[in-house]
Image 1 (tube, rainbow, N blue to C red):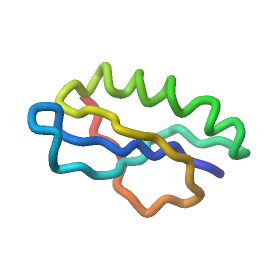
Image 2: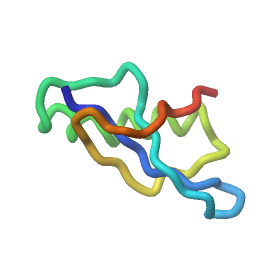
Image 3: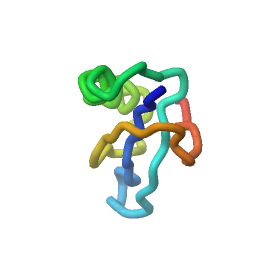
Image 4: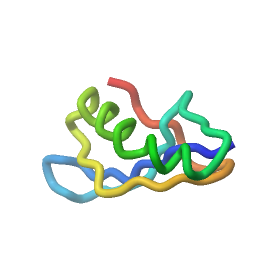
Length: 70
């Protein structure tokens, strides 16, 4: 299963960047993941406005923490 990983930085400073995976967002194939990644990332950022997304990627078994929620 592929997971969406977002690369985010603190919105206030543009620093302290890190990666998180979006919990509960898993896809059978890479194309589905890539297709969904921008919209899912944007939806997550609306709820987490202290971060700015600078990129997304899809990965299998990503070894990064779950994204904060809210």
